Amino acid sequence: MMKNIRPIKTEADDDWAIGEIAKYFDRQPAMGSPDGDRFDVLSALVEAYENEHYPIAAPDPISAIQSDMERSNLTQSARASILGSRPRASEVLNRKRALTVDMIYKLTREWHIPADILVQPYHLENEVSRGKPKERQT
Image (tube, rainbow, N blue to C red; front, side, top):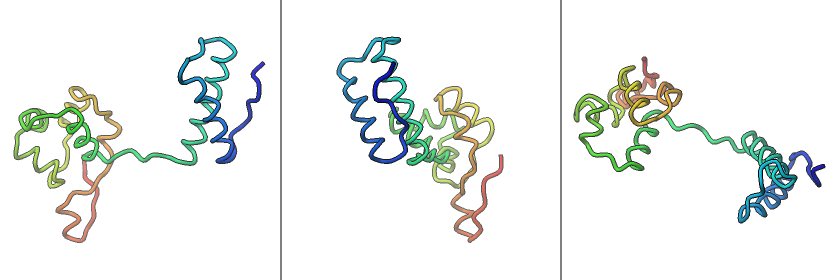
């Protein structure tokens, strides 16, 4: 029987549960043990509460690519190899040209950026500057 487990309905409940699982950070409990089960249940409850009350929006495709490039310290030639050429890479990253299906495929396969992020609609700069914010077409 797991001691003192309860639903997380308020911020105070969330703070309590985080405090409870923090005790296990220094020494992870064995899987399948009573403490391990307690850790798993509390972690799932915290995750569910925080996903509902503090959702984190996925980045738009260009922000995701830029973030990945910064994290990986990619060169201009690496960008060009994925996006077609240096000028094309510059246009895509400056939101002047939409990603193509081929680019999305290569970014997913080679840089492991999830396709579901890359296929999201986003605004191109030239469409916004004309006063007509349109979503890109794929």
